[in-house]
Amino acid sequence: MASSTTILVTDTYSSESMERLREGLNPCEIIRTERRPTTTELQRADGMLIRSRTVVDAELLSQAPRLKVVVSATSGYDHVDVELCTKKNVAALYTPDANAPAAAELTLMLMLSCLRRMPNVQRALRNREWKDTLKPGAELNGKTVGIIGLGRVGSRVARLAKCFGAEVVAHDPYQIDDAFRNLDLMRMALSEVLAAADILSLHVPLTNETRHYINARTLEQAKDGVILINASRGAVVDERALMASLDSGEVAAAGLDVFETEPLAPQSRLRKLDNVVITPHVGAYTEEALARASDMAVTALIAALVHGERQNPIPTWRFN
View 1 (cartoon, one colour):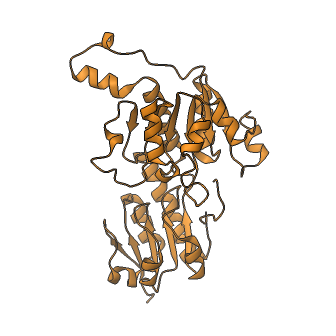
View 2: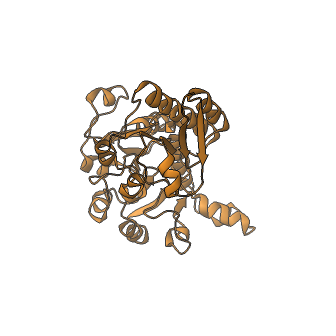
């Protein structure tokens, strides 16, 4: 009789994907938990299915001697120590294509909400006021959208923004020229994008290179009155510098789905500013994206454990 494979699932996965997992790894034991796994659970795990709230670090890996593969149903990957996984011969995989449509759509929602001053609009209506108490909003049509990171999400945002009549410029030193040509975009330096963009949208992973990529210095280089959108990773933006620029008016508004510390602290000023639209890291939080990511992650896990294949290994290079 074949020995059972134990899979530790530490976040939300669809019931359909769990059935596929049982069929693909029969016999299979699935341990599900909504918290950081215990030592006992980790000691039994041959594979792990996670999302971004589970940090795969030295502490976790030291407690998982049987672990062969970790799959994160995410497009970001800063929560996984890829180099340490490689040293321990643990395959670290992810699902980069699953969440791109949802994240791109949320990005456009944040842009439009900032342009139309949605926090003020909603507050006015709830206070039984009408539009004559409000400043008029603005259109995306005719604006210049600057995209930092022309990967899976950034390229979708470029296409969507163009559909609204926006001009799009982009910076990504790690994409090939064809990525720009296919979108009819000119490759620009960061300083050029900062100077040109009415709306600056961030689509980069969190790395040593991109931590506080947007800071006091880069915000000074940006066009006066720029709108900043961040649906990538919170620490890409220096929040103290951003709040100072929001206070001064150098940044007209910000749309943020991610934050340096999550969950966002109840006392954070970002919750109170009229020129900030915030959402609680829901870029990939749609029924469709959850189902796609679950299915892709399970497919990759089965392929790794049964066939030794490594589908979508987490990269060690930069702008994805």
